[in-house]
Amino acid sequence: MIVCNAQPNFESNWIDLLKLDPVHPVDEKKTLLRRFDHDRLIYVLLADNNPVAMLQVALTEKCPVSVKELWDQKIDEDFNFAVFYSVFRIPTSTQGSVRDLIYGAATDLQKRYPGISKFITLSPIPTLRKTFKKNPSIETITEFIEAKKDPVARFHMMNGAIPWAYRPKADFSKLRRNESYGWMVSYDYTPLLQSKEITVTLDPILQTI
Image (tube, rainbow, N blue to C red):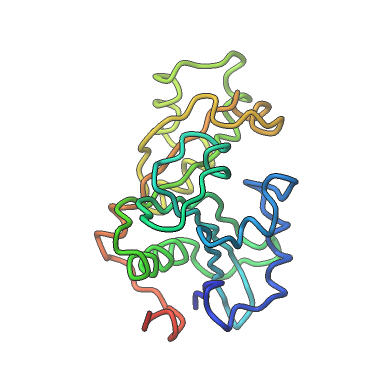
């Protein structure tokens, strides 16, 4: 079952689980409060009523090309993009399909915001610097990603997404510089949503929105 923080049955104690976010760790800029703003949503995948994975979504007008844009961009309406900026499994859990979580969230977002036309990510490349001792060209990175040599690339592509855009200088944090020279990738989940090949169990409240 999938629950959204916009629902009354979203439990407050799940908020602390966001501190486990390995993609965008909570800090002074990426605070817990910002993650619950009007242009942000949190989805939780449950198994036996226990959270097993979390997906964080940013609603934007323009496609963010950097982490700074992702966190600074804030609008009240006219959302065109749903940016899956972090998805992670709770470390103690092995149950549930994260693919179902992503698809279920996208299905709900379409109902809430019909104007959204693109469902994308802004994802790290954690093994890029380990593989290439110098900052590689975009052609080299494209080949590296499309060959699924990076674990994040494998995760998104095996879950139905396709590499959509490569973002140089997207994240200047120490973590991202050490991982990927600051490069990030936007994967596109829109074709997965359009295919409607996945059956997921949504919370009854979610189904009626």
